[in-house]
Amino acid sequence: MVEFSGIKEIIKPENLVYKKTNIMTENTLSYCPGCGHGTAHRIIAEIIGEEGLQSEAIGVSPVGCSVFMYNYIDIDWQEAAHGRAPAVATAIKRLLPGKFVFTYQGDGDLAAIGTAETIHACNRGENILIIFINNGIYGMTGGQMAPTTLPGMKSSTSPYGRDVKTMGFPLKITDIVATLPGSYYVTRQSVHTAANVKKTKKAIRKAVQYQKLNKGTCLVEIVSNCPSGWKMTPVQSNKWMEENMFPYYPLGDLKTPEELPTK
Amino acid sequence: MVMEKELRLMKGNEAVAEAAIRAGVDGYFGYPITPQTEIIEYLMEANPSKTTGMVVLQAESEIAAINMVYGGAACGKKVMTSSSSPGISLKQEGITYIAGAELPCLIVNVVRGGPGLGTIQPAQSDYFQATKGGGHGDYHLIVLAPASVQEMADFVDLSFELAFKYRNPVMMLSDGAIGQMMEKVYLSPQKERSKIVPDWATTGKPATRERNIITSLDLDPDRQEMFNRKLVAKYNEIREKEVRFEEFQCEDAEYLLVAYGTSARVCQKSVQIAREQGIKVGLLRPITLFPFPTKRISNLAAKVKGMLSVEMSAGQMVEDVLLSVNGKVPVYHFGRMGGIVTTPEEVVESLKSKLIGG
Ligand SMILES: Cc1ncc(C[n+]2csc(CCOP(=O)(O)OP(=O)(O)O)c2C)c(N)n1
Ligand code: SF4
Image 1 (cartoon, rainbow over the protein chains, first blue to last red):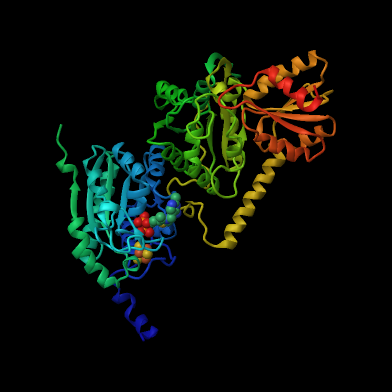
Image 2: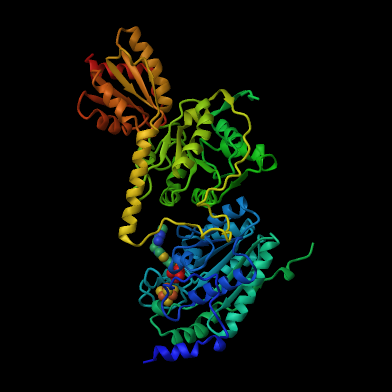
């Protein structure tokens, strides 16, 4: 058992190298231990703070494990119906064009029930940022198959593994979004190591800056874990993600403004 | 300076669109469906983004359109959508979220016959859906029923007034006849778009206030029940204060017709025909379907021998008439369906056979 006084000793001000960004609220995160959602929230909160966007930002939270994201980041929020966040964000940005409008969505939310809203918002080139957490499963409802579930991967609704003959193939929706003329910056990252957290932060910061140009939709996919749904320890889940998710969903930029054809 | 109203000859659908621009609406989000497509066509043609700055957007579906309304309403903006029956069914998810988040907005339903794809002809078969909730959960829309092109125009402003007053979605329940018919209409002068930002709106959190959160979620049963009670209190206040109806020759009436929208227009003629035959008939036209003119109908039940509820449906509003009358006098339903508009003569015949006995 760790003594509390011991911890207090360690977190003396002179020892601190990292602290909670004040854009995060004091509310306790509802996520399972080791889940990537919390890390992704923290990165977004840091960037909102560092870029001075607290009074500009309007977030749209999804239906999924991150439904309560509005409790954790100290900005204005709207909670959208399952999958509809891009439509909600579309109107916010059209009516308040000077604001920074973003959605945060899981793979069930974004790539199953909300596929139409996602594709069409990106195809219209709505000047919003979409943060897409792809953990290959429905976390909130207890680990059912998602459109992104890998072939052979077990879930509570694919207990013998996803059979692509009857259950379809994992949907690489980010790749589809990258082909749309309306999308401006599309990238796939992860938050499972310190190095990847840094890269993701850089990517989201870029997306936020691109957003200000009003040149189209930015989408940052974060391939993430769901230790509870995958029935693994956090460490196992990260290893499994590297070995299985990354080959199917390779990390890196899918579309960067530099690569756009010059007119 | 008092600005003159402008007189125009227009379809009901066009009148809604023009009135929306003039009312200073901030955003319209829609998807084409007969018999109301003129609304978005008119708005696209008028291109108010260049004049008032109103946003007009053709969404990928009615689902997307109503969720855009949610997003815009949550910013404190005056936003609206329109559709017809099958499209309104698709919007129900968004409508219940809007009711649950207590957001103001206007939803226009230019009703056509159903169920299913049904017909593109006028009907009044969405009464239950409009007045009893429509989507899941305990909620009510405020429902206004226009009976003329003029009212389709006038009710835009009225809808937003009520929507913002009560933080509640308002439905204008029209039908394919009023949406498509041309009548003269007096249009109000152009209003400026409001610059007032409600204190609950999500517009970006300044340092001077707490963050605003628009949601319909609360997993705590006690708090959720408290919220449900708050909604009930709001609906009761609306029932108390916002009932609107019109009476036509009710003073000496022995029989009462109850009808709204297109059916009410038909019934005015029926009253005339019946009176020429010596039958003392009056007409009560509910203008608000929620709140329903329950008290007035209950009072009239003490004076008349019977009532006939006339609607282009299998009999939906008749249930509210029955509840209002509460057994005091006989109540019957008469209506045509499938997109057929009732004739005045049919109504008189029905009145005679059901209530007077030949
Ligand atoms: C219309 C509707 N259908 C289904 C649900 C139930 N539901 C809640 S969350 C969810 C899936 C969430 O999965 P995902 O988007 O991948 O997010 P995660 O929980 O994994 O972060 C579902 C199906 C719902 N709330 N609303
Ligand atoms: S269920 Fe999965 S996605 Fe949800 S909080 Fe737990 S680990 Fe994270």
